[in-house]
Length: 510
Ligand SMILES: [Zn+2]
Image 1 (tube, rainbow, N blue to C red):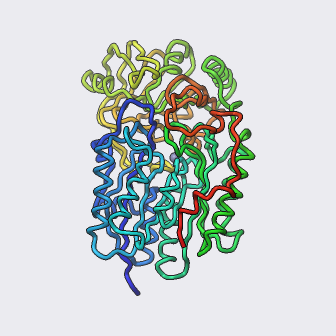
Image 2 (image 1 turned 90 degrees about the vertical axis):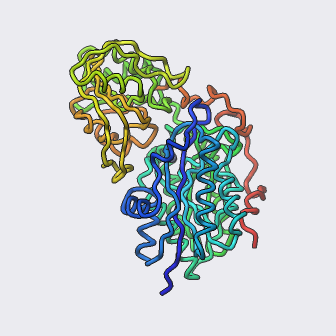
């Protein structure tokens, strides 16, 4: 049997275009793996690479490791960081010697200060270097704002089916299996892409919510139901990325039949358009006053904790809800995990456990973050926090939060961290000795990923909308590049039937 030589890499970031903080080389390097660290460190993990590697190992393929780094969601990538990893991936592939194929994970919603479509730029550089004969299968996040150009540069593309993203490894496996089928001559994957002028705040991209759940079920069952379909993905887009490609995308891969792929992508796209009002669950979001009152009322009645979701916070340091809880918590046990504030974390580490100090807590990431809370805090614990993740999305991943502390401020316990990340599983609490079940209210800042763990445990999830950079009301955002006629920014938007749209035909010639 031939041992296929397959290059494996990843470069992922979900960019909130409006944030002033760029995500630089040091941020990506903190997460980067290369060589045997990529292969040994990510094999068996819940990452896209974990899926790539599992399928390649089963096939006896030789893995050529490039670089793999995933910074989750943050501000735009710096141009220098983008160019660094673009060159490392493209040069790595060009210089690897004979390759049979490439497997990449790119998020699809990265932006840089000068590039609205960095993934397209990276793939263009790759095709410029190696041509179009080399099969390049790319896995993207469900929140990708995909461009037609990007799709045209991939041999085939694959997206997560679920948010929370519990199927990252499975998505990598889908891409790898499709590559192997192509190499064995068992399939001739042709990908079609159709865009729909609809975008949802991330909070409503939870794929357990109807009718999105029905659309996802329709999408992921396509290969079983329609002969000739190899794979199908529904990308919800990322509302906080300001790009001309903002919005939903349907991508379908068919065996040797572009017209079939396109017809099915169009059918799904029409369903998204038809359901657009129902996909926008504005009824699930409360203002801060109403939301906190509701949370306290439920907490007083229920034994299980209530999760309050300050979802508009994109950097984990908004202070709108926390300030109110510190002022008004009373007898309630309120916990706020993972507040990003390196300054306060450093001060707490310097002071040490047991100390009391004056803090200026959180709210510093931008003028929209709510401003710092000035208060006296008791340091319950302080030190460096590094551990291996156990949650469904971070299983096996090394989590380094830097200097960190557990503080008591008024009646509220707050864990303060130096590397911004969202609390999406119980590690965020247990790593600081906090018992979820003993709380009345837990204040989270996740969008959908928390649901995999917290939804079954919480008495209720109360979503509050605050003025930070990720609001449910998208009209608050100063878009510059987003296309016109996008629902719900334009409630009267109309959509041209995709069957008249030939843009996707460029995706695959012949
Ligand atoms: Zn995502």
